[in-house]
Image 1 (cartoon, rainbow, N blue to C red):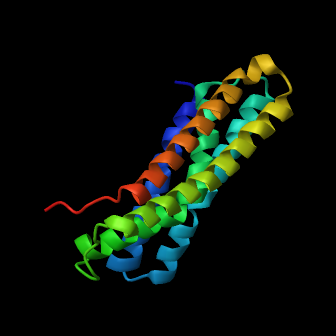
Image 2: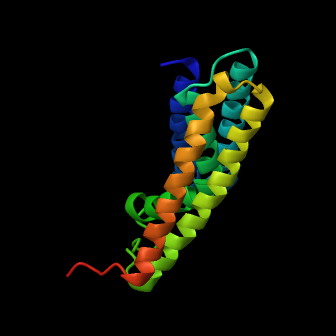
Length: 179
């Protein structure tokens, strides 16, 4: 694995470490402001990854799968970050601190609407990540060095379309509760 791939792994670990530290600080240590600051630091990880990926390519590296995944990671982290933190927050409160309502599963039209909202977040992630990919392709201006980035852009476009079809299927055939 190259250095960018390791940085992606470190970024993902760092993201969740900051969330866990933020939640522990907030609910266990009762330091709400410090907990909020730790949770608010998660976008800094994205910025570090963005800079490192750009610098690596600027210095002449040929784009790899890791560079493309970095762009996708950044888009997903920005678009889904807040909802992932809320998801973790609700579960931490209920399962760890034994406070708040039990997280409930959604079914029927509620689930369809929730999944569609996630698809909209996917579109936002795509716009951010694809913007990063296109920006790198334009900035490097060497098709032989950015071929992987262009390939990932095509695949991600297809995945976004498939995710839309799945999202719509839940409106046609709503998810039923297990009996």
